[in-house]
Image (cartoon, rainbow, N blue to C red; front, side, top):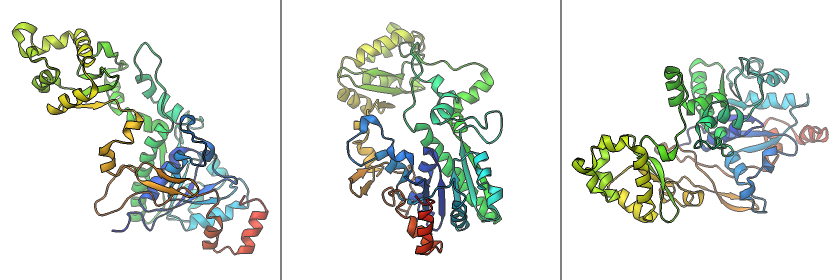
Length: 401
């Protein structure tokens, strides 16, 4: 079968990660994505995680979020670029941007302004907080809008320590899935109505969607959900414990009574089933702090591999507190083909991360590495009808970099 978005053309004009990641996802689904970069290239090309620096030309993060695209370098701040943008968008199905609405208005890139160029254009915008309301012009990225102001940060970490930090790009990648969803829904609406439609996603809204169970409960309870203190967990079987060889494992049994006999067998504590000597299950759970302490001692008495065998033998719900070197070697992830390879010119082969969807009979995945800055500028302009002399004039004027 053909890729789901094989005939869909996307124009990406963005400074942040969320839109870039969403457009990489669309490219994995078969869309033809033109990435507009400023002369000199997207600044994200120079941003790397310091602990992952290898001293070479490879930028794994940029490859992850820009694979399968074509690059056109264009100084969109110059008036001469408007004609090029208009020609691109006249042929596009989707325009994805994180320019704020005011900047879109100044450059004639709002949905209303572009309707005269392409009446069937799907116009997708990402903002930190939204296009209306008292925070509509407030700057922010995923650390601010997704992580901190949404309430997620305030829920993370064990008291009395400070809330934990977000990992780079985590909020952007969560928002990118919402962007893809919004884009597909808007595309469907466009195809039904025959008219262009606008869609908006916010980092802030993506954060509260991630925290939706707590937020919905707070509307009712009108109180803050407490951060869990591991030694005082109300449910000791929804908690993490350290093994003798220093690994963490996470028990995830919200209703441990259902598994009580299996838990006792896995822990080698069949005597806990004897209510006459140890009290009922309910009485043991009431002494939850003492039970956590007992579990700490038990798990610290055996190595991780032995606990893995015991917990799996009883089909209990648990997971390792995996570190990233373990994650990238996880046989389950490899069986699901979640780490496809990219051949990056000049840098070799790179394992990246697949879009987390599967469609029967369709090969979904990277369509190639990230482009070099402006790698496809001349070819794209040629497709728009620009001849070599006209391209040379634009390049000489500094419009193309």
